[in-house]
Image (cartoon, rainbow, N blue to C red):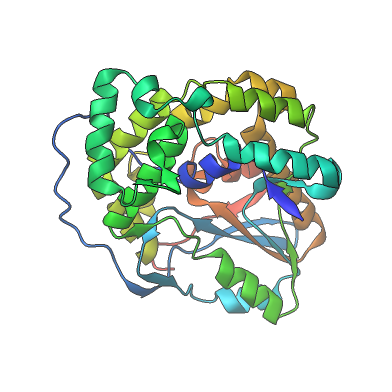
Length: 340
């Protein structure tokens, strides 16, 4: 049994994949002029990393993508059939056996409570009046069923309200954060009997029960996370659609040149600076996840003639991303051609 880190993984699953944003703007939302692509699409070509006679093909993923799109990359089946190993997109998880059965049972109920503000506080209580007024407009416009017996979002922490708003805003725009790439790659690997390696950083948690107890009773500095998410939904839907369409047809230039600032820095900072993360000993989780992938990639390149890997495309095109790090280590890199 494998548990996603909660609540960190819950938030990052919704927010970290976002890689495009406009500057803050409180004006009227932009008109959604461009339709999103639908149907079967090839996506971008694969990055080729090699050293000696060994090669790794990397598929770049993006979120969000068109809601009604399916992915069928050219030659992906043949490449996987020739490979010795497939590396998943990196993440973080905790194996229940590392915590112990009874510790897991104690943590799960406590983790569920972290979604709500401490002491029964509502968003109206924790948000500045102007931000709360803006939240009500966004909530009513994008989120259905926000105040039911099972889903009283007004009692949620701002960061979880932000994740719900982001997901609902994508849906209204014809976009989805669902992973369309990994199921195709995983199923092809299984058909061809190729080893699948889940690239997960598995931290050793210091005082996990104490950390969760502290989180349940502590208000986090997460108002800016909600503010930045509202800005993104209000101003940047068109830009997200542009990137989603570019990924679908494999336009790397658009993906590389579209601004990549987003709200995730504000949302990540909620956890990075929180005292409960010190108790867990995991203040630098994102860097450790990336280092885990780098270690897995270098190991695969040293032992496999052919490997297939999956990474967010932002980490492939960024100046300080995974491809740049591999180049600095002496690996040869060939980026996909426009016609691939």
